[in-house]
Amino acid sequence: MVAGYLGSLAVMARRRARWLRTDEHEEAVRSLEWVAALSRTVETDAYAWKWILIALHNATQGFMVLALWDGTGLRALRDNIAAKWLEAYRSGGDYPIEKLDEFSNLYAKVKSRRGAKPAFSPGLTHDKNLSRLNSFRNEFTHFTPKGWCLELGLLPPICRDALDLIEFLGWKSSQVLWHKPTDVRRVKSAIRATRNALQTLSYATNDG
Image 1 (cartoon, rainbow, N blue to C red):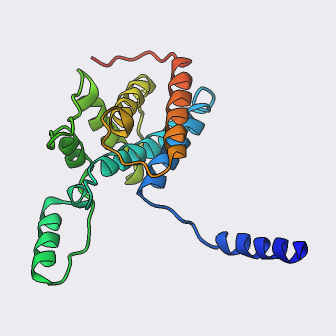
Image 2: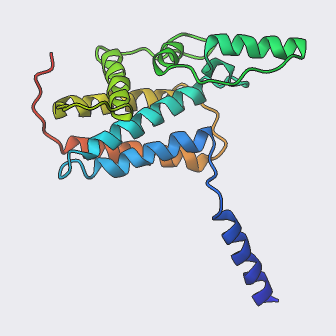
């Protein structure tokens, strides 16, 4: 009996290993955990910043998507796609291919008040640093033949400001509906680890 049960568990484990399963919550949380893991390595390997920026962009975008879900997910889509989706829903026509809105548009949306939900109110540097995060990530993911020097002193403030936005959306504003309490603990742990790692860095910067 026991041997048969253990054998069934082994078969189930092999079956689970065949698939990479994810959703909008796991995308946001797991990306942030990658940021935390990589942040411990940048002091000895500056190139790790590339992957931190890419993962942090994915995490920040993921949290904006979660915050904009509003029961349908349409606010996270491009406005014209959301309009076509609603028209198809009302008329019974063909639904459009869903396309996520641009990072800058998602950021503008979470800064706009929606009913009782508070909007993100940026400080003096948030807009500039979130724009830089998007720009640097795009440079890396669409890298053209060139030499490029990125000032390291710019990067910890970008991370801190992105984490501010993630914290606000994740629980300070009650905008994200968490299905698993463990996800909140994972996010808070990743943010704490990342902030601690950033505190140990001392880069000079010429940024004005």
